[in-house]
Image (tube, rainbow, N blue to C red; front, side):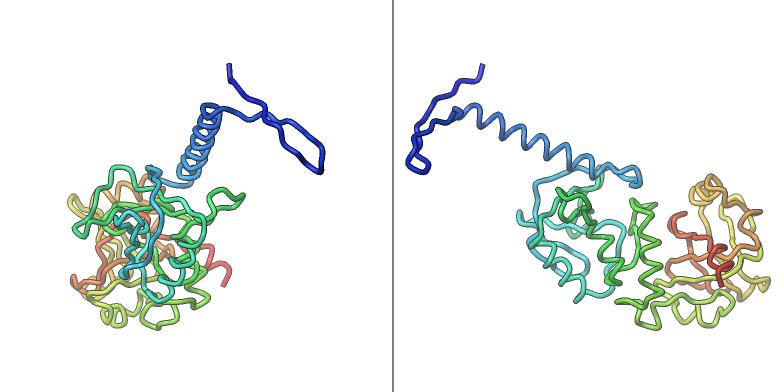
Length: 286
């Protein structure tokens, strides 16, 4: 049973009484509020569209340290998952606004710190509102960052690719730079100009060669000079599971991304199946 005491107060010259709960009752309500908040955070960080699991925390943003690194109030460091910052001035302004906004931070489950002691994290702005906003989505939508899972094999939030496409078409942020825009696969000379750097390449697949150790997605019948995507067995298996096998890819217009290297011509070694996007619907609209 909850015990309470009655205390007299005076409102407008009339004496009234109210029930004042004891400290134990207040503590129980406080704990209930914390539990409700934790349940809300777990619900938000467990959205069905996300492919990763998250560990909610009590951390808060202290500032932006550059190179995509966010400093937390505890002194710890975080990296926003699924993005690579390209416009650091814009990112710093966005993070500064986020620090002044109610937010919730969760760390990627099972992921430890990198060599710079940073943990991958997801940050939600206005988490208690009807429409919480994702910091990664804001960075991508404004052109402050591009989609990139880093060392992980896949994206936690694949919807970021669509946001990036809108930002790229609108020429926002980093996409204003000519060198950041997509390169046509049928211009291997232009693709090679990006050697050693990240690039987005778009074109029609002319053939797929499946081998035991690698699969090769070709964008030219000129095997010694045309653009090729090199796919490891585990990544190829994921593509096939998604319905993108040799037959369905051949003749389709696709968008790929990665670091440009030279292998009998310009090539990309595909880091994740998420980096192959079909563009047939776009071709029909044009």
